[in-house]
Amino acid sequence: MKNLAKYIAVASIVLGLTSCDDLFEPAIENIKDENNMANEPNYADAILGSAYILMPYPSTPENDVATDDAVSNDINNEWLIMAGGAWTSQTGLSVNNWRDRNASIQYCNIVLSRIDEITFAADEVINEMFRDRLRGEAYGLRALNLYYLLQNYGGKTADGTLMGVPIWLTPFSADSELNLPRNTFAECVKQIFEDLDAASALLPVDYKDVADNEVPAKYASKGVNAAVYNRVNGATTHLRFSGRIAEAIAAQTAILAASPAFSDQSGVSWEEAARRAGTVLNRVGGAAGLAKNGHLWYTGGEIGNSVTASVNHAEIIWRSGAEDNSTIEGDNFPPSIYGKGRVNPTQNLVDAFPMANGYPITDERSGYDPANPYAGRDPRLAAYIVTDGSKLGVNNSEISTGADSPNNDGINKEAGYSTRTGYYLHKLLRDDVNPNTTNEVKKPHYTARIRFTEIFLDYAEAANEAWGPMSGGQFAYSAYDVIKAIRQRAGLGVDGEDPYLDAAAASKDAMRELIRNERRLELCFENKRFWDLRRWKADLNQTAKGVSINGTSFNYLDVEPRRYSDYMIYGPLPYNDVLKFSNLQQNAGW
Image 1: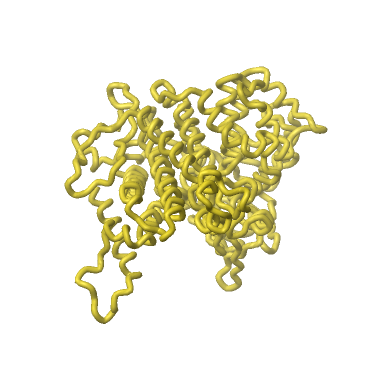
Image 2: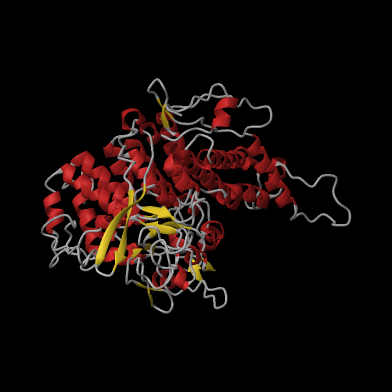
């Protein structure tokens, strides 16, 4: 917990640099504390801003390389090392998330404990609106961090009890009792839902400028007009935590809790998980509201044409701000176009893409040709993965990934730059970017924190388990309807029909397999599969495979084994914290 105090001190020092004190007459002490919030509302906002800064959303693929979907060509990659059998309770995965998530919760609790003391405006009603918004954001961010703590550290102890993490609802200080036992997983889920419900009640669904007749009744009844409302909750507040985001995180929490690894003691049913996801989807019209190009949201045309400072792409529920750079391309383009080729998709993932007619390549009806393996495939394969002969980059360069490649794009040509699997990453990369430092072309990028497609897939999974493939329970759309919309958007089927989907819809088990595969494809390289495999209690030890191409010869290879023990469906609490705090019980096996 010392790290948390250090974070707060550093934040205070940085914030203190904005003081108007005479630089030539330094104050006795230039470190602010929470008491400053009462008269400095910007300081309160900055404290909450520290929770935003520490949010758990990486901007690049990270843990995909610890699954059967990808490997890294960087031998020092911590996920690569972990997947090879070196995952311990002392690694960064265990320690860093514990520290950062708890630090964020501390910041939220500080704001919640002092919010009613802060004066944001002289007008009482405007002051109330500011307090409502920051209070709602703090509840939402606290729930978000508790959800990620559960995902990382929720698990069964030696006696078989499903435990979560200690729940912190008030700020702790040097005098606080820190040696607390873990709350149960179910208690943590309940707290997450309570915080998200509180956030939803206080926050607008989305931040946008409204007209006078659109001002919420609770404020309009107090004389608030559009100009006043927009000052607090208008478009300038875009990208902060909103009511829609709260509903989406509730759906994510519910699907985690209803999954096989947690369902026996979480208190959450598949029906509740479907209801939570359906609440989000109803706001966009259900299955019919799937964004037309949502599977291509990251491409140059989609970002450039649809995203402004206060507008999201139709696929995006929450994102970071857009920033011009070429970083992800520099890390992942093949070396011939000035990249390091870091993330290498596996043959396992390539084989998971069906043919364009919707049939898996293992089905005799698919028309798959082993001698021409990339022809006639699901269009998402070319959109997400660079195969031998793909064209990429600003000059539409042809990429040769085979053993006979004339350059370092070929498999294992140069350690640390060339592909280890015969494939390179395409998803998340913009073809109109050039990472060459002598002729660099930068373009806008952002991190998609939560996408609608993920919530559609959450709904499909939960609805299938709760009601079967063809029923939507209380909703007007079923798991079948959602998966049909996703596959149609991808370009699968024959003459508007999808016979493979129709056959799968006859069985909950067959539909489950199809839903999981669609999730694998749609969310690949978005740091989802590492957690999905665990919550499903699926096989973690599928060897990562690749292909070495020489002319017309395809030699399929074992590239990297996965070495996980059975107990690793649950992650470990940090070793030093368990050692330090006697009441903090470790998950079994660690």
